[in-house]
Amino acid sequence: MTESDEPSRDDADAVRVSVVLPAYNEEATIEGTVRTTIEALERFLPHDEFEVIVAEDGCDDRTPEIADRLAREDDRVKHFHSDRRLGRGGALEFAFDRANGDTLVYFDTDLATDMRHLEELVSKVDREGYDVATGSRWIPGEQADRPAKRGVPSRGFNLLVRTVLRSDLRDHQCGFKALSREAFEELHDAVEDDHWFWDTELLVRAQRRGMAVAEFPVDWEPKGDSKVDLVRDVFGMGSQVVRLWWQLSVSPRITRTRTVAAGAILTLAALALMTVYLDPSAVLSAFSEADPVPVAIATLVYLVSWPLRGLRYRDILSELGYRERIGFLTGAVFISQTGNLVFPARAGDAVRAYVVKARRGIPYPTGFASLAAERVFDLLTITAMAGAVLAGLLVTDGTGAVASAVSGNVPGVSAGAVTTAVQVAAFVGVVAVASLLFIVATARSDRNYVRAVVSRFSSDSYVDYVAGVIEEFAGGVQAVAGTRRSFLRVGGVSVVVWTLDVVTALLVLSAFPAAAETMTVTQMVVVGFFAVSVGNLAKVLPLSPGGIGLYEAAFTALVVGLGGVPAAVAFAAAVLDHAVKNLVTVVGGVASMLGYNVSLTAAVDETEELDEEETEMGASEIATDD
Image 1 (cartoon, one colour):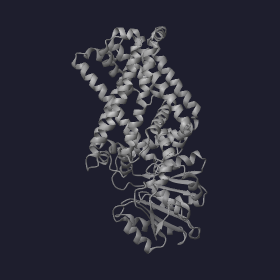
Image 2 (image 1 turned 60 degrees about the vertical axis):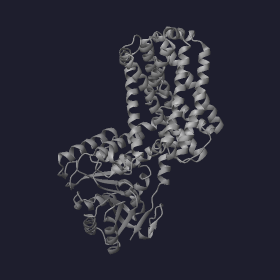
Image 3 (image 1 turned 90 degrees about the horizontal axis):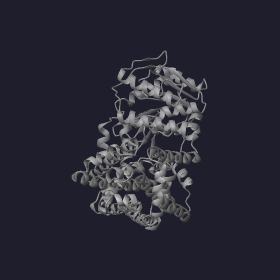
Image 4 (image 1 turned 90 degrees about the vertical axis):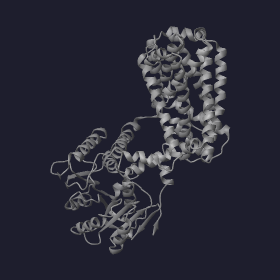
């Protein structure tokens, strides 16, 4: 029969112990595992006080057929089937939700842990009153025949968890655990991982909540071969350790006020660092000599670029199946870019997804996919501009000047800041081009390049999860970049948008007499295109709100090194250029927020619940066979 997504525990069928066996393609072992489990339980429990649940997780072998047969032969055996992969943790959580036992138990189907420990595991929770119990291969008394290729990574992971997540346990990943119904009800909403890290997160969160956790030694013998898996162990487990550390140790201490204050301090520090190498009085003097007319024209030119951003965003959404007016989308872009200026880590990008969802009903996945497409075109356009100018400079014997500017060997400019900015710009540019080529190749081919590439680094089932995340993210970009018509239309508008960005900077630079007198118009255009392009690539990584600091460093060094402009004047122009653009952004953002009744802080708070909402929307149909 088919079950709903709501828990369906039947109190009339309540039993003392529910044992869940997470199974993925276990046709060779599942029958033996179920029968061994029943025999072990019958040694210390009455016939009708336990159940054994096969939590079959989207298998594509004969495991479902075997589990169905076992359930028909013994009414204590149940089979929970998922049409798609839920992940090891997801399958366990789903089964526990619907299990009838007061004590919930699970262990790996390979039976690596000696089953003589099963009674002790159950007793820890059922009789001794512990909230959670776990077997351990790494405490005195255990007999774990663990080869170095398994033992070293395991000990390293457990040391990392104990150190970073402040756990008192020695072994977090031993697949031999039990917990009370009450503990599960309290913890399962908090545990976010749905794959291999589920065990560890459950134990860590239980300790943080003051629950009684028992760890006892077990005899353990490895079954089959194992190796360090790059995707599962590094990408998966490592990233989850960082995520949980952030949620438990950092996030509770971060308030909105502290976030904004920290961003402001970073910005001021970045600008202050530049003044160490420049005479502040010379910078102020350069500001006082600037002609306000070119600056005013620059402001108007930059303002003109914003409706074009709205037009481009409309075209991107159109390729994804949504038609919206340019005015609304321009406002949404204004709001998101204002959020990026106020909050670090580009939180404004999530704000835009919230705005289009809240005001126009565009789903969050589509909102994020459209943002991904826009970012790729931005980076590709800027990289192409920088590359074209760099090629021209090298051809015209500008090698020395370029090398001097890039290395930071420019009088009056911080070499460290310049090197960092240019290195970041080069890295971002290479990644942008490689990403676009990869996405376009995937879109134009029947072959799934994403899954093929990820599979090269991993043989674990976690590949399905990681590949799915990447594919969902890249899908929107493929839809936009996959056809020549949409690529040329969106790409053409991107070129105009960033050309206006450069023109804005050139007008600001021309407002300073020292710059206008030093460079010819042609030289100013060439240098300006290169400086603005590299500066914008440098500020892509969210090292400070709005990229303030890195942009100024790259712009200043290149204008000084390539154009011969005094450092104080170049720095003043960079600051003023950035200030003009940020002022237009903030004014437009505030006006849009008032017009659409959107609060930045509320939007950021709302986006923190995206994962939970999307998970609920994407719940799969699960069937249960008795």
